[in-house]
Each structure stands twice: as C-alpha cells, then as structure tokens.
Length: 71
Image (cartoon, rainbow, N blue to C red):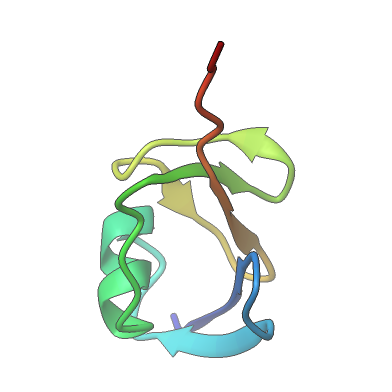
C-alpha cells in the first residue's frame, strides 16, 4: 500500500511525497524527501515525534528549528 505524506520545513515550501509501503517511519520519509532533521524539532500532523515514529497516509511532517535559551 502506497502512502502520501508532506514535509513542511520552516523557511521552505511544503512538498508532497509518496512512500512505497504503509510501514514508513519519519526517518524513512525524510530520506525519501532528501531532508535532514538535524537541529529541528519534529512533529507529525501536530503530535510530537521522533525519527522512529510512524507516518500514515495523509500525514504532514513538520520540522521547526530548535529554540536555544540565552541570556
């Protein structure tokens, strides 16, 4: 079963991709999108996620820069 997902990275346009099966993780999806999550917080359709989180058909992966606390 193929799935469709989107990747939204702050400062970039939202792009749509297709994965060849329903057992896709965030890591798999970002490899397909040729996108790194280094330095970013990840959420999938609004829920906090990790690289091992599953991606379902119609999901959007959001990558938002991590905030650094300063003085």
